[in-house]
Image (tube, rainbow, N blue to C red; front, side, top):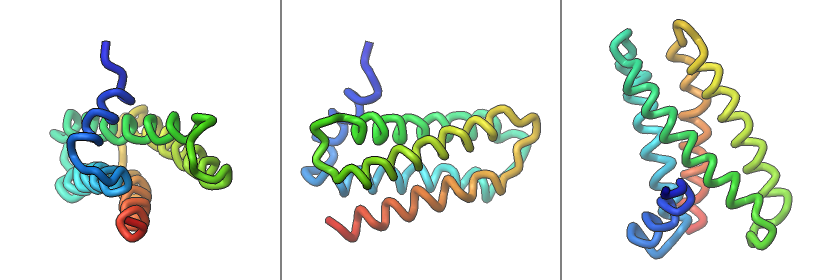
Length: 125
């Protein structure tokens, strides 16, 4: 069975030689999916919302797992920030998924975080 980390690593190698650019691209893609759902909020979006939240959670799971690796070259403070963001994203995602009638505004923070991190990754590349 393929793990999300393996899929991420394989896609990263194929998509670009610059891992920061790849990470920025997938964060931008996730933010775009969430934004489209936010902009077209209806009762019929449950399946699309579930898929977009799952995609976003998978991305952040890989980021958190990667940052937790002892040999990861990022400074400890940045790795801790990534872990904290991931925890927040997991909690917000759970809040949205467990709500009987989730409010579209709950997506705003997830969208903003992904866009801000992507912008930072693009500018560092």
